[in-house]
Length: 324
Ligand code: AMP
Ligand code: MN
Ligand code: MN
Image (cartoon, rainbow, N blue to C red; front, side, top):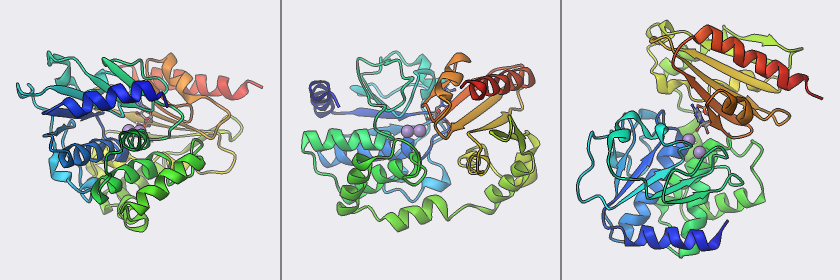
């Protein structure tokens, strides 16, 4: 990690009285964990952070210490806001529609998405670290800021959820050392695992069953895709946030190199999730359609022509798999 740049970010963070912490739409464990992890540290230092994420906190991550700090996006920021920090968010747009009309620029971007163009004044983007929670951990170590048990729990949650429980590529000795240190500092691995992986609601489980039934296997069994139709939500009682993790079902099949999930939106749009076991760079597929992410996990959002765009993405996957 770039020490000089990290120091500039530490200095800028330290000088803010009313920092505003932001993360991406459709937030996941790393988005909530990063925002709350940084909020705890800044509060401990006597600063007054505010946390905004589109839609506010979701039930699954309510176990995180300080969960009540997360608020839905306001149309305008409080005037006293003196430093905007975007965490875990690969593009400016993914901070949410409402943020686009805010006049204040983004001061600091801290992220690990390889596709992040760096839309802040200071940008620390570290694709080698598999979660933004891990990037924050390095920043706090360099700053010698005390990581409280609450902050450790939040950062650990980002690490475990973004690495699929320390299973994905990108999990290395460094990741495990960071996780071990966070456990020493007070994160409880089995309790966090219970909350993240063993507490699926009945509605989420019902949605999973509907989605599992749509499986289609292609490309000589090297790829598989799932579909979510708009009426699945009504049928299951689940919410859009309940799709997190569903893609693992196809991706876990032996020999399947690329897994994809196509969600047909009620407005005619299409949301795509892509996962790769390593042979195919799904970030480059997603980027060619205006999306992004990482080599092993990426996403795309199309505003219209859902079926046509699904077919184009499936063709791109077939082509990528046929390369020697
Ligand atoms: P998901 O499949 O939604 O879990 O997303 C996989 C990864 O790709 C995450 O790290 C996302 O932040 C990123 N990602 C998802 N959708 C987009 C998008 N439309 N544009 C850029 N990055 C995305
Ligand atoms: Mn995320
Ligand atoms: Mn992340």
